[in-house]
Length: 84
Image 1: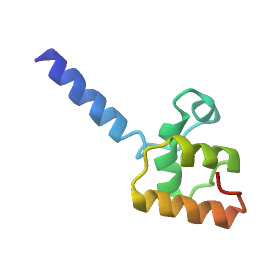
Image 2 (image 1 turned 180 degrees about the vertical axis):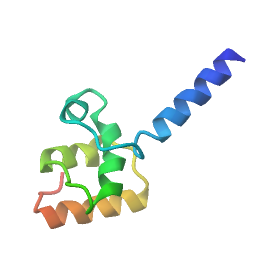
Image 3 (image 1 turned 180 degrees about the horizontal axis):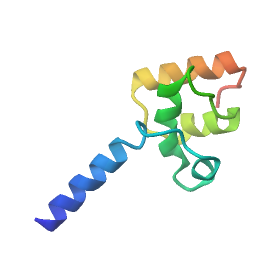
């Protein structure tokens, strides 16, 4: 029972990683920086987008849906980033 509750908690935490507030520079630079990608994609254009290097990290490391991936490609193109 405890294991099931723990697993459910982790799933909720990871699922919400992209829906929370804007990530700090420290969070982007950490080992789990890819968890900031969904929030950055979802927040565009209201929020400033991260650097091209971080957007490339999102393209390479984040688990994105096909619609998130298309939106990321549009953001990268608008920002002038070279595709990964």
